[in-house]
Image (cartoon, rainbow, N blue to C red; front, side, top):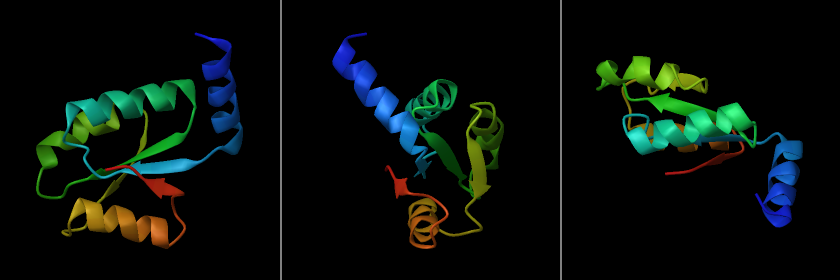
Length: 92
């Protein structure tokens, strides 16, 4: 990895930001969340879509924090979590 990217990763890690991802049914999101959790660049969180309980196990296996969407749109739920200060940002 080049020095610039290492510098960006180090600065991001130092901030200890928490980022929530509302699309926990998407394998690409699960892969990204697992990588972020492993490298500790940010503290990822996944919103579990209550209409897709079959995806819960895969999301939990990433090592990211998980929270169930409580029968509302995962994106709206994620945005509400950010507004409440539970997460620093949302990536959708």
